[in-house]
Image (cartoon, rainbow, N blue to C red):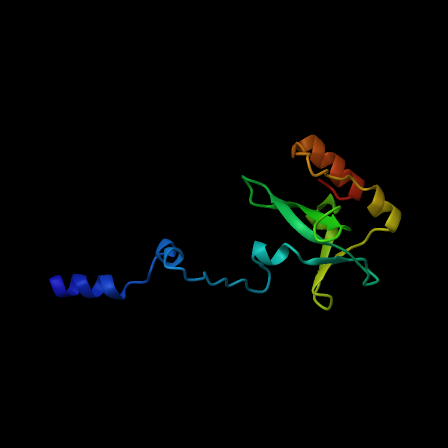
Length: 141
């Protein structure tokens, strides 16, 4: 009996916590339609003509529904200084496998006039703010 218990404890799979604690990297089976969040951050954003306009700085996920609401795009700047951050509804972005990045269909003036998040600002990510952002980009909320 003791041999069986000992054998089971040595052959069982390790828990996630045990793997993390021992320094093992977690495997990510992203599949066809999923991608890990750390692979999205830093991904380039292009215009439909292929011109790079910025990158995804981070994205905002609904706490209760788990749905990505916004990508906060980073435009301009040098080495992280002077960059502008602009929230864009996730639905306004399309992934282009050839570019290995996201495409935002927006004219230069639309992009430049889009709502900005200043470095010291923390927007109220509420329904009123969402209505403003989604409305600006013409995406139903």
